[in-house]
Image (cartoon, rainbow, N blue to C red):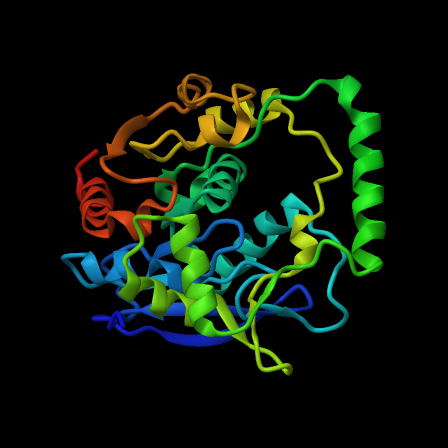
Length: 305
């Protein structure tokens, strides 16, 4: 099994009636901005371990489990759906707690990259540098889609309460590792075995359950408004590094409804933009090529200007 070279420590922070699980590496350093890593949908903070291990330098790194993922739990009953603005408020409060008035370096993957982009347009003064790892956003929508979207949201919430559309449980931790490798064929067995124990936990029936709330599968009730997203991009004042993988995940997911070319066009709204590509990698580039990705991140964060 993979052996972490830079072990993390964890703690829980009260955030808006949740106990937020936060993983840290290194120690606070007054000479460097804190580095904040935010994960994607159905992922966990431990997923950053391979990139942290590959980093040349040692610095204070903070990585939360988003609400309803990993070990972050609500104080009361679990919600039956999740709202995107909640991630923005959660991140703001976590930065209050860890960074105070200091600007941070922020790295986000996938959903976390989308959160990081929007947040950086809302609170531009809080971000020193931003790295967006395939935080694409969503296909553009039209107002005419609103009635159907609300109906879909209602139907999926009702289905959740009927016990439908839950997350699959696995008979063993090996089954979890096999699932991770099936989803990402580039993932080596040693890393899959290690990740499986972070991504899932034993249940009362003797199996293993994914550390993610099934309510995350409920579609968002609100449409994705591209004009709003672009306005937020324009308000980002920090230098931004947009990183994509050599594999075209958007083409696989959206079948032409949202293309990589459209994403590259959108991201041009960011005033201070650089772009890079990680070769021989898919969407989970932090698993596929952690050394290459760590180098890109560190070089960008340390570059002048």
